[in-house]
Image (cartoon, rainbow, N blue to C red; front, side, top):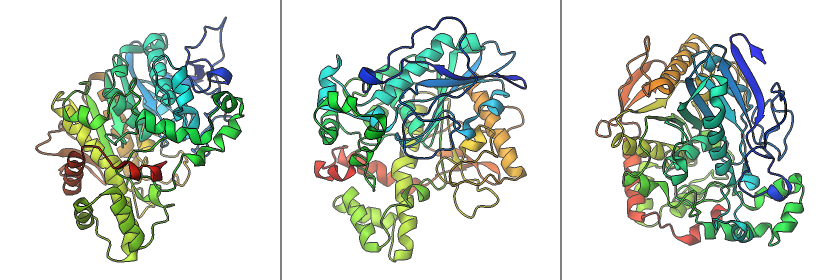
Length: 486
């Protein structure tokens, strides 16, 4: 399908449908098809319950497809592979805001992928582990991403892309997956650069045994579970999805420490300098927590204190309350949002920047603080994605398509910087404000606010506290705290 100067290919399978006996198994490579296959329509989304602004025709377990936007005259162009977010329970490569046309006009080949989410992508179970030749279960969605990246390496040259210049980029769970691949032996040779937007990096991970114990709640008989319809499996999501996420404790229905794909937590890998060196951009948004914590039943000081003490034992709770004080009920919501944003996104993003900068000088950090003209809060988690893809008019659940000339200029700057980085590992390009590499001693970053400018020390004091907390805890969180996070 042609769109102006951009060729668009939709719904290309990269794996066999993970249905029937292939449910809860590693993805199998796609079988070659005879003749010419149409690539003019988006494929189904993977089963999920949340609305993500997708343009897919429906949901189906047969969902392992990708989409490509390529400049018509492309030849060995940089390749950018987007891994969507959605807290590992939702998301789609067919979201309206992810249309790759505008970004591809910057001279890059854009790829978006689907991967299994929720119970279909991240269920661990002792019977599934017994089936595995790797004695592993639970990380099927991450294996989907790995196979999609391998497919790109093997096939993207046919679409004008350079398989030696692949940038993995994503938001939230997507960039958290990229972070995990930087620390995993399975991440070798999948991509040469990475852009991580609000990654949920360096969080403590559930072990395989703990995830198996949680998965048994669905039933002991795997054959019976495989015989359930997709809708029946999806309906059981609430059995493993907590209403309130632990802030410093592991959780299931996301990648786990399975001993194969993920041998250990990211934090010790990062701290010891054992992550895979490569140029990266990593950043976060000014308000990462307000929307995510809005449904939480935490409205009073008493409820807030219980949350803090559940996540920060003993003396660390006292220090946490000094940094995130809530003396009145009216302050609780803001403090919960700040605590969520720092523990889930800001801390991991800074740690990744610090760790990579010690190995690779081409490390770049940003903070996105630009509020759209009609907003008096935010920018919230994921709201920079519209800018990165040049789709400011795209609608997304809860977000109005209102923007002004500043938003347009910022979007153009971000697309140009992201494409320049994909080309040679440096986001600096003609006409853009100077972006200096990240240096841990300076704690510097580029702020995308009402203006684009250099700055230093984003939330330094609370992030230093969190670093000391995890160091002292040694990531050995009391297991009694984990049951609440299933």
